[in-house]
Image 1 (cartoon, rainbow over the protein chains, first blue to last red):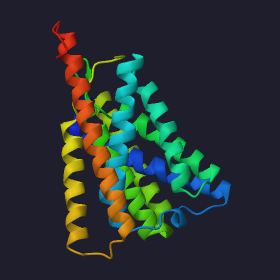
Image 2: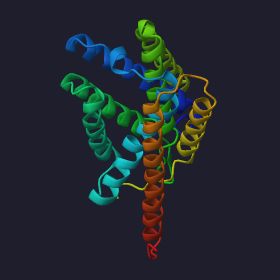
Image 3: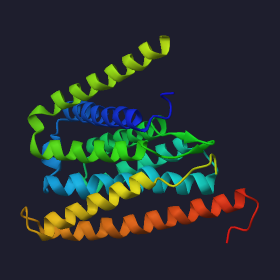
Image 4: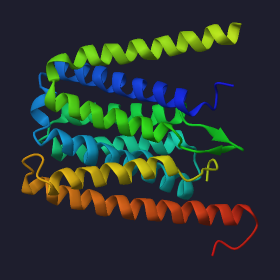
Length: 177
Length: 72
Protein backbone atom coordinates (compact mmCIF):
# COMPACT_ATOMS: atom_id res chain seq x y z
CA UNK A 1 0.00 0.00 0.00
CA UNK A 2 2.83 2.37 0.93
CA UNK A 3 4.96 1.40 -2.03
CA UNK A 4 3.28 3.82 -4.46
CA UNK A 5 2.23 6.59 -2.06
CA UNK A 6 3.38 9.80 -3.81
CA UNK A 7 3.41 12.03 -0.71
CA UNK A 8 5.24 9.57 1.50
CA UNK A 9 7.86 8.87 -1.18
CA UNK A 10 8.32 12.62 -1.68
CA UNK A 11 8.88 13.26 2.04
CA UNK A 12 11.24 10.30 2.37
CA UNK A 13 13.13 11.17 -0.81
CA UNK A 14 13.46 14.86 0.09
CA UNK A 15 14.68 14.19 3.65
CA UNK A 16 17.08 11.49 2.42
CA UNK A 17 18.41 13.85 -0.27
CA UNK A 18 18.92 16.90 1.99
CA UNK A 19 20.33 14.93 4.94
CA UNK A 20 22.67 13.02 2.61
CA UNK A 21 23.95 16.20 0.93
CA UNK A 22 24.57 17.89 4.30
CA UNK A 23 26.50 14.93 5.69
CA UNK A 24 28.50 14.39 2.48
CA UNK A 25 29.50 18.08 2.38
CA UNK A 26 30.48 18.04 6.10
CA UNK A 27 32.49 14.86 5.65
CA UNK A 28 34.45 16.24 2.67
CA UNK A 29 34.80 19.84 3.88
CA UNK A 30 36.10 18.79 7.32
CA UNK A 31 38.62 16.33 5.84
CA UNK A 32 39.52 18.51 2.82
CA UNK A 33 39.88 21.76 4.78
CA UNK A 34 37.51 23.88 2.66
CA UNK A 35 34.24 25.63 3.39
CA UNK A 36 31.12 24.97 1.30
CA UNK A 37 29.84 28.47 2.09
CA UNK A 38 32.81 30.01 0.27
CA UNK A 39 32.20 27.99 -2.91
CA UNK A 40 28.63 29.27 -3.38
CA UNK A 41 28.91 33.01 -3.84
CA UNK A 42 25.85 34.01 -5.83
CA UNK A 43 22.33 34.83 -4.63
CA UNK A 44 20.47 32.18 -2.61
CA UNK A 45 17.32 32.47 -4.78
CA UNK A 46 19.44 31.72 -7.81
CA UNK A 47 20.52 28.35 -6.36
CA UNK A 48 17.07 27.52 -4.99
CA UNK A 49 15.00 28.21 -8.12
CA UNK A 50 17.41 27.95 -11.05
CA UNK A 51 20.53 25.90 -10.26
CA UNK A 52 19.11 23.04 -8.16
CA UNK A 53 16.13 22.08 -10.36
CA UNK A 54 18.06 22.56 -13.63
CA UNK A 55 21.10 20.50 -12.61
CA UNK A 56 18.88 17.69 -11.34
CA UNK A 57 16.89 17.56 -14.59
CA UNK A 58 20.11 17.38 -16.60
CA UNK A 59 22.21 15.01 -14.45
CA UNK A 60 19.50 12.85 -12.81
CA UNK A 61 17.07 12.59 -15.71
CA UNK A 62 18.47 13.52 -19.11
CA UNK A 63 22.00 12.04 -18.88
CA UNK A 64 20.88 8.70 -17.32
CA UNK A 65 18.01 8.43 -19.85
CA UNK A 66 20.37 8.89 -22.82
CA UNK A 67 22.75 6.27 -21.34
CA UNK A 68 19.81 3.91 -20.70
CA UNK A 69 18.62 4.19 -24.30
CA UNK A 70 21.95 3.93 -26.08
CA UNK A 71 23.80 1.50 -23.73
CA UNK A 72 20.74 -0.61 -22.80
CA UNK A 73 21.43 -0.44 -19.06
CA UNK A 74 19.28 0.20 -15.96
CA UNK A 75 18.72 3.62 -14.36
CA UNK A 76 21.31 3.07 -11.62
CA UNK A 77 24.15 2.56 -14.13
CA UNK A 78 23.16 5.75 -15.96
CA UNK A 79 22.68 7.50 -12.61
CA UNK A 80 26.19 6.66 -11.41
CA UNK A 81 27.71 7.87 -14.72
CA UNK A 82 25.55 11.00 -14.46
CA UNK A 83 26.84 11.52 -10.90
CA UNK A 84 30.46 11.30 -12.08
CA UNK A 85 29.72 13.80 -14.87
CA UNK A 86 28.02 16.04 -12.29
CA UNK A 87 31.26 16.00 -10.25
CA UNK A 88 33.41 16.76 -13.30
CA UNK A 89 31.14 19.67 -14.24
CA UNK A 90 31.65 21.14 -10.75
CA UNK A 91 35.46 21.08 -11.04
CA UNK A 92 35.48 24.56 -12.62
CA UNK A 93 32.56 25.85 -10.55
CA UNK A 94 34.49 25.00 -7.36
CA UNK A 95 37.67 26.72 -8.50
CA UNK A 96 39.58 23.63 -9.64
CA UNK A 97 39.51 21.88 -6.26
CA UNK A 98 39.87 18.08 -6.52
CA UNK A 99 38.35 17.54 -3.03
CA UNK A 100 35.28 19.62 -3.95
CA UNK A 101 34.95 17.76 -7.23
CA UNK A 102 35.06 14.40 -5.42
CA UNK A 103 32.40 15.67 -3.02
CA UNK A 104 30.17 16.67 -5.94
CA UNK A 105 30.68 13.21 -7.51
CA UNK A 106 29.64 11.40 -4.31
CA UNK A 107 26.70 13.81 -3.88
CA UNK A 108 25.65 13.17 -7.50
CA UNK A 109 25.72 9.41 -7.03
CA UNK A 110 23.77 9.78 -3.76
CA UNK A 111 21.10 11.84 -5.56
CA UNK A 112 20.81 9.13 -8.24
CA UNK A 113 20.32 6.50 -5.49
CA UNK A 114 17.55 8.66 -3.98
CA UNK A 115 15.78 8.97 -7.37
CA UNK A 116 16.07 5.22 -7.89
CA UNK A 117 14.84 4.32 -4.41
CA UNK A 118 12.00 6.86 -4.05
CA UNK A 119 10.36 6.76 -7.49
CA UNK A 120 7.19 4.83 -8.22
CA UNK A 121 7.02 1.87 -10.58
CA UNK A 122 3.77 1.68 -12.53
CA UNK A 123 2.97 -1.17 -14.95
CA UNK A 124 6.64 -2.13 -14.93
CA UNK A 125 7.74 1.39 -15.85
CA UNK A 126 10.21 3.50 -13.89
CA UNK A 127 8.32 6.80 -13.53
CA UNK A 128 10.92 9.16 -11.92
CA UNK A 129 7.96 10.34 -9.78
CA UNK A 130 8.37 11.75 -7.15
CA UNK A 131 12.07 10.93 -6.78
CA UNK A 132 13.15 13.60 -9.26
CA UNK A 133 11.13 16.35 -7.52
CA UNK A 134 12.51 15.18 -4.15
CA UNK A 135 16.14 15.59 -5.29
CA UNK A 136 15.33 18.94 -6.96
CA UNK A 137 13.96 20.21 -3.63
CA UNK A 138 16.87 18.66 -1.72
CA UNK A 139 19.54 20.17 -3.98
CA UNK A 140 17.90 23.61 -4.19
CA UNK A 141 17.31 23.89 -0.44
CA UNK A 142 20.80 22.56 0.37
CA UNK A 143 22.35 25.32 -1.80
CA UNK A 144 19.95 27.87 -0.29
CA UNK A 145 20.84 26.95 3.31
CA UNK A 146 24.59 26.84 2.57
CA UNK A 147 24.35 30.37 1.16
CA UNK A 148 22.09 31.88 3.85
CA UNK A 149 22.51 29.97 7.13
CA UNK A 150 25.63 27.73 6.91
CA UNK A 151 26.02 27.79 10.70
CA UNK A 152 22.99 25.61 11.34
CA UNK A 153 23.28 23.37 8.28
CA UNK A 154 24.27 20.36 10.36
CA UNK A 155 21.14 20.75 12.53
CA UNK A 156 18.98 20.91 9.41
CA UNK A 157 20.62 17.70 8.16
CA UNK A 158 20.05 16.04 11.54
CA UNK A 159 16.37 17.13 11.53
CA UNK A 160 15.90 15.66 8.04
CA UNK A 161 17.59 12.43 9.11
CA UNK A 162 15.25 12.26 12.13
CA UNK A 163 12.13 12.72 9.95
CA UNK A 164 13.46 10.07 7.57
CA UNK A 165 14.00 7.57 10.42
CA UNK A 166 10.55 8.36 11.87
CA UNK A 167 8.81 7.63 8.56
CA UNK A 168 10.83 4.40 8.30
CA UNK A 169 9.70 3.33 11.79
CA UNK A 170 6.05 4.26 11.14
CA UNK A 171 5.99 2.24 7.91
CA UNK A 172 7.53 -0.81 9.59
CA UNK A 173 5.13 -0.63 12.57
CA UNK A 174 2.15 -0.42 10.16
CA UNK A 175 3.45 -3.34 8.11
CA UNK A 176 3.85 -5.51 11.21
CA UNK A 177 0.26 -4.72 12.30
CA UNK B 1 16.65 0.49 -22.89
CA UNK B 2 17.57 -1.37 -19.70
CA UNK B 3 14.14 -0.67 -18.26
CA UNK B 4 11.00 1.06 -19.43
CA UNK B 5 10.49 4.63 -18.28
CA UNK B 6 7.70 7.19 -18.35
CA UNK B 7 7.80 10.98 -18.65
CA UNK B 8 8.19 12.78 -15.26
CA UNK B 9 5.41 15.39 -15.62
CA UNK B 10 5.66 16.47 -11.99
CA UNK B 11 9.38 17.26 -12.23
CA UNK B 12 8.98 19.19 -15.50
CA UNK B 13 6.13 21.23 -13.97
CA UNK B 14 8.22 21.89 -10.85
CA UNK B 15 11.17 22.98 -13.01
CA UNK B 16 9.01 25.31 -15.12
CA UNK B 17 7.40 26.93 -12.06
CA UNK B 18 10.72 27.42 -10.26
CA UNK B 19 12.35 28.95 -13.36
CA UNK B 20 9.40 31.35 -13.77
CA UNK B 21 9.54 32.31 -10.07
CA UNK B 22 13.25 33.06 -10.39
CA UNK B 23 12.69 35.15 -13.53
CA UNK B 24 9.94 37.06 -11.70
CA UNK B 25 12.16 37.81 -8.69
CA UNK B 26 15.04 38.80 -10.96
CA UNK B 27 13.03 41.06 -13.29
CA UNK B 28 11.10 42.51 -10.38
CA UNK B 29 14.46 43.35 -8.80
CA UNK B 30 13.52 41.70 -5.52
CA UNK B 31 17.19 41.04 -4.96
CA UNK B 32 20.39 42.47 -6.38
CA UNK B 33 20.69 40.22 -9.43
CA UNK B 34 24.16 39.98 -10.91
CA UNK B 35 24.87 39.99 -14.62
CA UNK B 36 26.50 36.57 -14.25
CA UNK B 37 23.24 35.22 -12.75
CA UNK B 38 21.26 36.27 -15.83
CA UNK B 39 23.86 34.75 -18.16
CA UNK B 40 23.95 31.43 -16.29
CA UNK B 41 20.14 31.49 -16.02
CA UNK B 42 19.85 31.72 -19.80
CA UNK B 43 22.33 28.86 -20.28
CA UNK B 44 20.46 26.68 -17.75
CA UNK B 45 17.15 27.59 -19.37
CA UNK B 46 18.35 26.57 -22.82
CA UNK B 47 19.87 23.33 -21.49
CA UNK B 48 16.61 22.52 -19.67
CA UNK B 49 14.49 23.01 -22.78
CA UNK B 50 16.84 20.95 -24.99
CA UNK B 51 17.18 18.18 -22.35
CA UNK B 52 13.43 17.86 -21.73
CA UNK B 53 12.59 17.98 -25.45
CA UNK B 54 15.18 15.32 -26.36
CA UNK B 55 14.16 13.15 -23.38
CA UNK B 56 10.50 13.35 -24.46
CA UNK B 57 11.54 12.41 -28.00
CA UNK B 58 13.53 9.36 -26.77
CA UNK B 59 10.71 8.20 -24.47
CA UNK B 60 8.07 8.50 -27.22
CA UNK B 61 10.32 6.78 -29.76
CA UNK B 62 10.99 3.90 -27.39
CA UNK B 63 7.27 3.54 -26.50
CA UNK B 64 6.29 3.31 -30.18
CA UNK B 65 8.98 0.71 -30.88
CA UNK B 66 7.84 -1.33 -27.85
CA UNK B 67 4.27 -1.38 -29.20
CA UNK B 68 5.55 -2.87 -32.44
CA UNK B 69 5.20 0.22 -34.58
CA UNK B 70 7.64 2.45 -36.37
CA UNK B 71 9.45 4.93 -34.10
CA UNK B 72 8.27 7.82 -36.35
